[in-house]
Amino acid sequence: MIIFGTKGYLYQLAILTLVCGRCGNPSAHTLRKRVNKFTLFFVPLFPFSTKYATQCTFCGAEQQVSKEQAEQLQAQGGMGGPGAGPGAGGQAYGASPQQPYQQP
Image 1 (cartoon, rainbow, N blue to C red):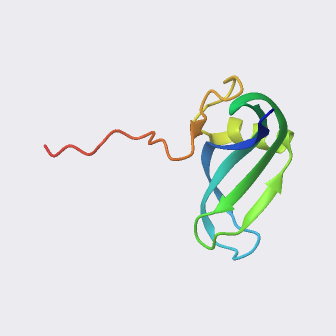
Image 2 (cartoon, rainbow, N blue to C red; image 1 turned 180 degrees about the vertical axis):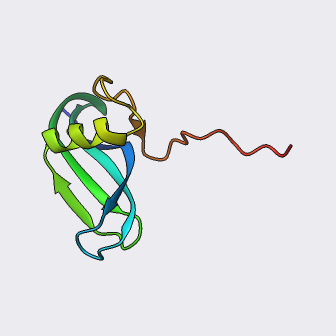
């Protein structure tokens, strides 16, 4: 018996201030990378699909972008910074990149 399937990973690459094409508001947009990997016996082996998208935090509209556009946006103002390698600023979805709040 062979058990195979897929598993999806969502990485937040950057938070950018852009004008939304749907609502027209200048607001924060998250740049995300979604990677689907083939799994064999629940072990992820290789990616077979990678997609990039921005999502408006004001209205929730999501827009697909190409890899080149995503790299340009990330270089302009992302957490990874210009010249950062692939995935340098990526945080897995749900992982907290901030430090916990401490009262003075």
